[in-house]
Length: 438
Image (tube, rainbow, N blue to C red; front, side, top):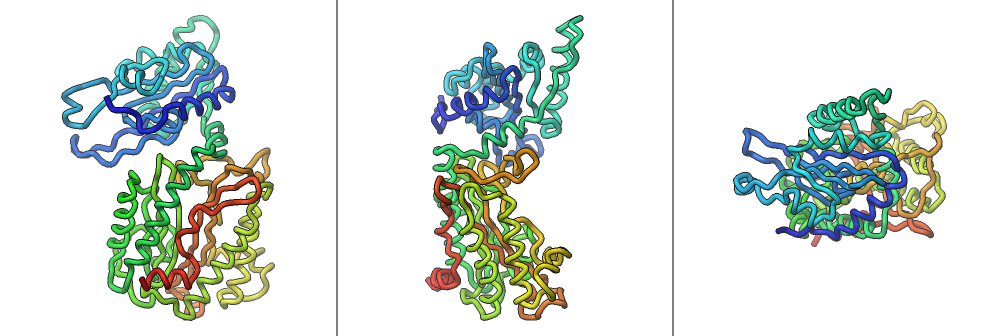
């Protein structure tokens, strides 16, 4: 019998913390379906984040039904033991193994879902379930609700109210525990090692694919199970495309290379962006352009502490970068006019931050009671200002055309300020040049 990789008490504690928030209801979370082509070619599998967050269980074909205050409370439907399928696809816990190793109150084969789920839903007054995320299970869930209603007979009660669980789970996942922060830091440390490795590797003539290969090799050599998201490895004009993912061009002398990549540790992911010259030496134009973004990031980082209103990060970034655009000759007029007219969006079209955690754009509300929320200890997010000038922008100074720069770090709010978990990845021009020389 395989043992779970992590202490199952962590997941039981998470369920207990959420119990009061959904008291009287039930939360139903299905696994992500396995991706299979031609019946026997399996793609890399990653469990549904919320299911893993509450159970630690990684097999496909599983469903959590959590009913605080009911007996049983934690019910798992899992793939049955099947020696033939395990010969082809690998080990399965099965209902008995899942109960014994993960501490669930009750387990069933997934094949019993249709007959058991309605009875589990009958005593609750509402169900927390994310519709339209798993179309196949949506049908199973809807049928179970209808059967539960029919079993209530002439009670006069209709279908159970269905509530999106993301608000409850998002608020909980936003406030990271010490263990969450430990795993997040580990993911960030490994991610930083990958960025250092590609700086050492990159030179004119290498292909973006080869750079990505160095990233993946470094991450897996540190025993990370997978990338946190599809890496962006964008050289030259590709660096001006925000979500560039072709990763197939030659890196040329005199161009920038923008690398946005992170890797996972226990489902928490790093999310780092670094931009550097392919030839290892910033030209005067590149340095001038790059340092505008670096200055903006440093100013924003200096603001971060408990109590800061989240939207103020973006407000300040827009002001600083708009001033830089004027100094670089990208815009004309005043800072105020450029902001009011939204002219700055031509070169800075995105936000400066997003929550980070078990998903690269993690769950968690950005507002409370209709207002942008204040930062609190335990929150983790990115800080990623950028400037992007496409090569065909004839209104921009020629020296900056085809330059895209983004600098992104991962920040945890502390009791007294903040901690930068990705500072190991060089971002000062002199530090980048030193790493690339060696």
